[in-house]
Image 1 (cartoon, rainbow, N blue to C red):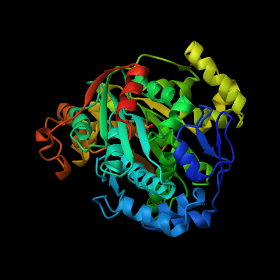
Image 2 (cartoon, rainbow, N blue to C red):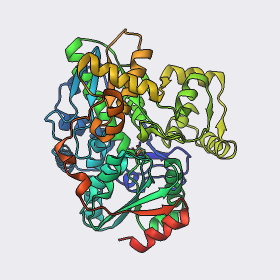
Image 3 (cartoon, rainbow, N blue to C red):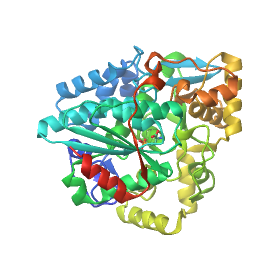
Length: 462
Ligand SMILES: N[C@@H](CCOP(=O)(O)O)C(=O)O
């Protein structure tokens, strides 16, 4: 399998090189040159596998340059850190299947990919006798998961930018209480979009990127998306065996478009996904895009689901690539138009295609609280606010023709304030959060300026 950039300036590179390159050197995002397709029989057989074995089968299709035994051992180690034997168990509550993606070390779906990516980086660096400085941006969950994936590892330093004061208290503590010498938390005086723009600009300076061996942990890194494709197959297999259904719908709370893009890839591989429901909070650019073709930039607003407080979704460029018939020049033009005008126009045909690919809903804070409350009343199950956004969208948009899986992206204990507002009691705390408030902390407040981050990195790079 070879990889190409959405902007056409990089092609023919291997999986290993794509993982280490992160953002493509032409500023685009990397994608496989072809998407392998699977037969109905293959998919049914995959659906019977245990999670690590399934992950191995799917990831192998895209990572042919990693010897099988090595890949298997990387994957097995990555999922051994999950506290549930099924890795991503499926709960059935009130007619909806809840795919619990939060049993990893930092209690969010990001662990599914970042436990793997941390091990993969370590493996690739040892093989090439190289070092890496990871630079990433987080609206709350990616940061701690990436840190957990590489803390204490040899030859890797990690620099994570989060928007100062705009992540939940537990999310912040999960990052800042990791005081290993290779971990640097930077609280940026701005929004997640500011932080992500800084990261992308620094990656865009290819000479600097190469000099400091920068690595990407955000879903701009193809390995992130790939590892997330796996759980769509897993959920499909489990639900198919339970219900005998031919198709399954998925409702996906998403801010950076990575998680739902993984579902889009799964569908391109042949997974019979009936509806892919894109669920956003009040930062609704993606929902407006799907529903009305209105892709225009708004202000980032703070909501009860802070991990989705995003306007500029980085993976959107990957979808644009397909929407523009895999034409890199059209993507370059679209990205330039968006930078200049803060909006994009789509033809009627493109808008129709988008509505075939996705359904979408923007869910308000009030509706989020109402969903946590009513779901709890009906089932006793406590949703985190992001999952509540997904459940709300599933309820409103799925036609009931086939089962719906809602991706449960985080554990409710990460968002105690929102849960308390909804059900007047605290969510149960998993053991990993016990005493987190009392641990020593380390982070730096930094202006939302490229040079400030660049200087910090230069001083602290490995
Ligand atoms: N919601 C994310 C934002 C970064 O997204 P990513 O998938 O590109 O890492 C977060 O919680 O940090």
